[in-house]
Image (cartoon, rainbow, N blue to C red):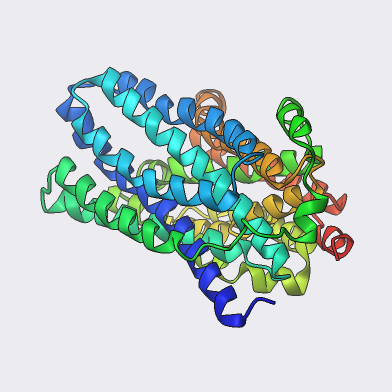
Length: 401
C-alpha cells in the first residue's frame, strides 16, 4: 500500500524530470543567433544543423521503447534525465557547423530517450495510483521551457558566454535530475495490474515498433495538436512583429503569453479532465482554438487582440497532448512504452513539419491566411475525432479497473 507521502514525493520527482527536459531544450534556443555568428553560418546552414535534433530524436523515440522491454522504466528515466543536460556544453564547444550538427544530434537523442522514458513512467504511475497527473507533469515541462528561455535571454542581455551559460545550466539541471531520480516511482518490484495487462512478450515488443499499434484517430489528433503548437511557437512572433506591425518585443511577448497559458492550463488540466472527461475537453479545446484564431487573427486587426488570441489558444491547447498520450498508453496494443513512442514520433513529426508547411502555404495565399488556415483545419480534425470517441480515455480508464 502506497502512502500519501510516497505518492506525492514520487509525483514531484517525475514533475522535476519533465521540468529538466523542457529547461534543457529552451536554454539552447535563445543562444542560436550567437552560435550562428560565432561559427559564421548562413541561415540555410543553421537550418540544416537544426535537423540534427530530429535526426537524433526520432530513432531514440523508437529505440527506447525496445530498451524498456529489458530495462526498468525507472532506470532509463533516471539515466536519461542525468545525461540529457550534459549534452548542452557540447553545443558551445562545437568548432564548426558539422560539429554543431553532431552535438545537436546527441542532444536530440537524449531528448527522445527521455521523452519516452518519462512519459512511460508517468502513465504507469498514473494508473498504479489511480490518479490523473499527466497534464500537470507536462505543465512542469512547460514551466521548464519558460525558465530556460528566460535565463537564456538574461544571459544574452548580460553578455554571458554561451559556454559559461550552458555549463552553469548543465550543472544545475544535472544536480536536479540526480536528486529527482532518487525518488522516482518504484517500478522494479511487482508491476501493477494495468502494466501487466499492457505488456507483451519480449519478441512481440520488438515487432510492434514496425507498425502502428495505437488507434489511428489518436495519432491523427496528435498530429493536429502538435501542428498547432509548432506553428504558433515558430511563427507567432513574426506574425505579430511584421503583419501587425507590433515590433519584435511584442512578438517575443506573444510567445511568452502563449507558453504561460500552456503552462497554466496544463497545471490545472487534470482537474478539468476529471470533471469534463477527455472527449469533452478535446472538443472544447478545438472550439476555443478555432474561435480565438478567427476572432483574434481574422476579424480584428489590432495586435492586442492577436496576443489575447494566442493566450486563449495556448490555454485550450495545453491539456490536449497529455490526454492523447494517456489514451495511447491505455489503448495501444503493444504496451505503454511502444504506444508512448509512437504517439511521440507522429506528434514530433508534425511539430517539425508544421512550420515549413506554413511557409509553403504563405507563398501562395499569404502568411496570416496560412497561419489561420492551419489553426482551423487542425481544430476541425480534433473536433471530428473527439466526437468519434477516439480520445475518450474515460471509457478506457473504466476498462482498466
